[in-house]
Amino acid sequence: MIAGPRWARWLLAGFGSAVLVFLCLPIVIVVPMSFSSASSLEFPPPGFSLRWYEAFFGDRRWLQAATTSISLAALASTLALLLGSIAAYGLVRGRFRGRPLVELNFMAPLILPQIITGVALYIFFARIGLLGSFAGLVIGHTVLAVPYTILVMTVAIRAFDPDIERAAMSLGAPWPLMARRVLLPNLLPSAVAAWIFAFIISFDEVIVTIFLAGAHETIPKRMFNELVLQVNPTITAIATLLIGVSILTVWAVAVLIRRAGLLGRVLR
Amino acid sequence: MSRIKLVSGPSGIRFVMPLGLAMLVAFNIPVVLMLAWGFSSPAGALAPWADMIERTVYLRVLANTFRIALICTLVCAVLGYPLAYWLCCLQGRARMIALALVVLPFWVSILVRTYAWIVVLGNNGVVNRSLLELGLITEPLALIYNELGVVIGTTNVLLPFLVLPLFAAMLGIDRRVLQAASGLGAPPGTVFWRVFFPLTLPGLAAGCILVFILTLGFFITPAILGGGRVSMIANMIDLLINRMPRWELAAALSTVLLLATFVCYAFYLKLSKRGAA
Image 1 (cartoon, one colour):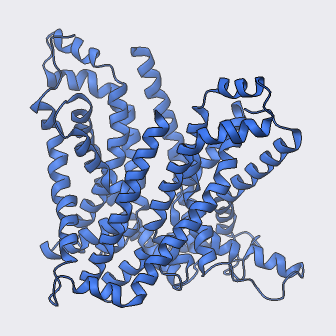
Image 2: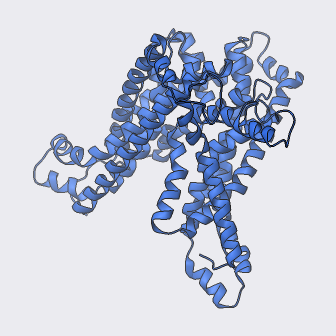
Image 3: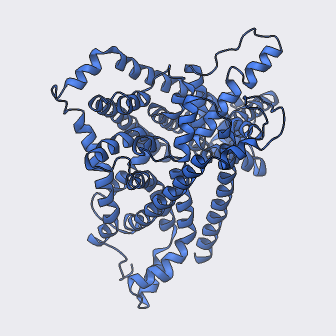
């Protein structure tokens, strides 16, 4: 960039690294804490133990919450992916009036503070009797996940050359056959990435869940309620498990995106 | 041009329809109902609004929220601008690693990141105990469960939202402009402040507005690190729905938050469009 004096470059590197440390500090701290033998928040931990993992896996309520979280996230992200991909195709390939407005509407749950979506759905579900139901939770989480599937899938479809679709159709394939044999295989890596994205969004969701869940407990909802009341080191074990899963997922998404990019280049 | 049209005219809408209808029922109608609820109090349509203005507590919470959002935005800008610039200076593998460290927290639950600050900054936390052992303080500093804690936690969560777009904007600047300036004899400081910095302003402003919007509606971090003392709009709305049952007032406050978000987002769109052009 701009060739400044040596001291300025050192200052910049020092400041930049310090900010990076600030960003990653929470993640670096939580992992060793989860293996601590102390029940207070001592850092560095006085000894090694797996007691907080035992506390998590030995507690039926935490495991129940995990089951709820996983099934909720799986359902909501699948719904969001199905509806979102079809809509993304229409948004990219279609030409109709009010298209930017429709797209903005699909992105709105991402732009609006989640508390607003939470309050709106709370009042609505209370009136139609869905408040506290699992179906209501699935609907709420799907609404929040839709922007992410739209975001990923519109990019993927825009990058896919429409001439390839035309070629298939000019050779006599009707649209559904073309979609199944040409479009789907090519969009699959992006679709998986979008699904994982949506899954994580739903799995981590706290605010809308607190409003809609009633008696249902998800992992983040229980974590939040415990954190507001007291400090319970079991949370560090869950946090470490979540960080591990997140890093694995990021890696999976990166691989998928690279494969999608490669495919795109090969076809072009 | 090809003879075969993939989708055109009304058939494009056909694809958008399923999600459009789902969003209408599960999002648009609920939001409109919520807006209407703010005007449907049995005590008169404007009663919750009058309440909101007369009882100073709500206005105080609003002012507090905007003030905290402004502080967090400034801190993010001060920390994020040099980091984004440094990322631009780095090359190859070092840049990849630094970028990965910026993106990594995105993937870790906000709850986890907020919890860690209790470990670091609490009365028994790393910072306070080190300071006590060094004899620099005699009793623990109150670093969390107050406004400072909220600002630290929020800044930590939202910093990547400023750094990433700003980094992209900086990469997009034509290096030849900088070379031209220094080739014409401008010292490095002048090149930075008179050429580079003004070119990054739209990107910086867009990132700042993004952070501001996100802080306005922040709920989790203030609830955990605020210790119930710092109330922001979102926490107030939660209280009004889940504890007090005063839905009409919650709806009115949500309307204010919705409007503020819309206005900021319009600015954001305008700025990011100018930054792209």
